[in-house]
Image 1 (cartoon, rainbow, N blue to C red):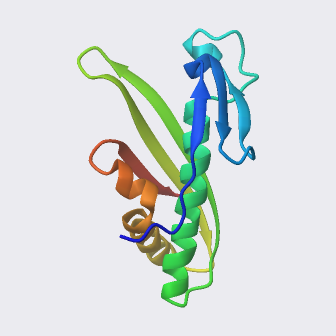
Image 2: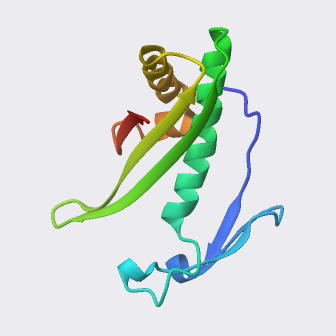
Length: 137
């Protein structure tokens, strides 16, 4: 495969540290959320960053598959990423993608959602490892 884009981020301090992209555009402090023992929810965390990246990538895949079929849509996604813990498996992620797709009927919107899931690089990367629930609003 031909690489069309790549980026690098570095982190120090893990969940209580700093993450920065190699170009400096992304430069954030990360902290444990309050639900995981952190002091508050005033900083971002890996799950928020993953949800944001996945949402942007998936929405673009949705726009792409609709465009390929000459369907004009307006879409808005809400991606929820949950960190779960199991005594036998340790930590796992699960994802819910809820899509509001305007410009087509519900049946077509559902098909577009499924096609986007098959196309999105994030979806491909986590396939078989993370449970992803697709929902229409």
